[in-house]
Figure 1 (cartoon, one colour):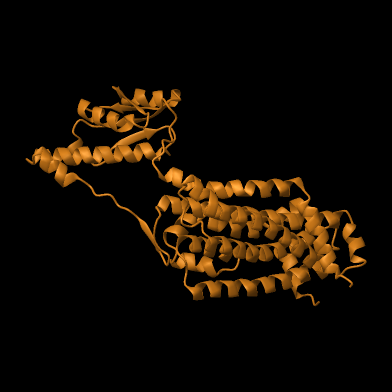
Figure 2 (cartoon, one colour):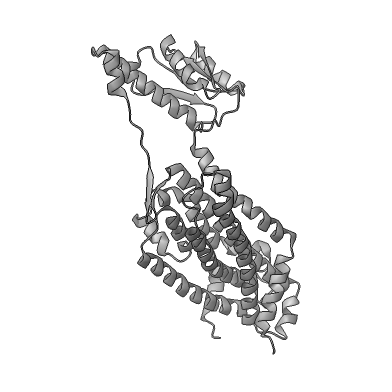
Length: 411
């Protein structure tokens, strides 16, 4: 039985990609990323001490009572609290000494203070600043109540704040899930999609450019049509990507079913068979969408540098979900998120993020996949036309506008 030329090209492309050390290394490292997705959010969501031993903060202008309460609060985290006398001198000391993290300015009468100022070396020591805010707030409220004539026991009773337990609702029942864990897990999965889509897209673009600049493509064109070359490359690379994701999903399932229960690990609710299935589906949709575009741009580009210049719109659309992950996670049904959900170039990543946060309705998923399928067909059709024209074009760098004009050429 005679095999099609597209199949032969796909087979060679698959063999070329999977035989590289880079593919093997990434495939091996993938399960460790899944492990990080599984365990790290739970570890970080618990109040883990992020500060190295010996970290210090300085209090300036505070009374002994305030200093002692703050010292006792931070003592269990290994953070040392010391007193200072001059605010400006303490600021300079923060910049000079590595172990001194920041300085807090506390006025003598905390009951009349509306804003406290904490000067930090990094500005990102969230644990320290939020703890200081809570301690100073409680002290100020307690002092005001004492001044109003309340007894100590009344103050403790009236100022006691209840805890808030967040429980995520799903069809399977209630699940423990804090916001930090949801955001961390979603970011990790979005990064996985982003890196693999970008990596495979650039690989197919660079592969086309190498064959074009080395004149190898002219030899291939003597026995295969341009469309067969492009489809073969996309199919071969897509099969390699699917193999890689299959390995990762199998390792994730082992983590869920075997390793997690055996080690009593608290796995995030988002790591489940349904989410892993959608991960593969959205990867395939995004791959065919972006791989087709990269194949076309690779055929039109003069060299790899030119490819990078032409591909900036593709990278821009991939970056949008990365930088907008917080509003997407915090409000998955907002108008902004809905627009990104149904815009083809951002739909795979954004809709998958929504699946991780709260499963969308069935019609939303079906509409998203319908838009993606139509977009993939149109993208492949347009890419094939650009590929046919650009694969033999050499000696000139074409602009993105000029390349788009090639779409008017007939088959």
